[in-house]
Image (cartoon, rainbow, N blue to C red):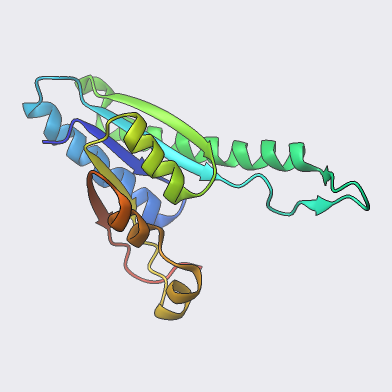
Amino acid sequence: MYERIVVGTDGSAGGSAAVERAGELALAAANTAANNVEVHLVSCYHPLVGWRMGDFAGELDGHDADAEAMGQIARNHLVSAEAELQRLGLHERGIKVFRHAIIGTAFDGLLATAEQRDGDLIVVGSRGHGVGKRLLLGSVSTKIVHHATCSVLVVHNPGPED
């Protein structure tokens, strides 16, 4: 049974489905685990979205404001995800929930958290992109499946999201 579950959330329907499934697995593990069960919620963000280069010096204009805004969005996703886990009753069962807002890609953040926290399982949602978007953007879940050193569960989210 899984005792340290790492789950990615980005506020999408796929992320919410992954959080719910991770919570269900944590509850099942709490019934049989000798050690404490942990759920590590991970939300990653890119603070340089929308950054602009200075005229000559190559300075980042507005970088701090972008970083703070994007970080707050990630933290909000984590608070919402933890609230969902509370509704499932994880805290009452003694399951520890940790929140990680990480600068970087979801791929790097989830793998690093799983490695640092000795994760048994990574749970990710499938965004349900069509073939064209998947070919153009790549798939975080596919990359994680191929590179993770622990088990991975991809929770399917039917239908494409915009």
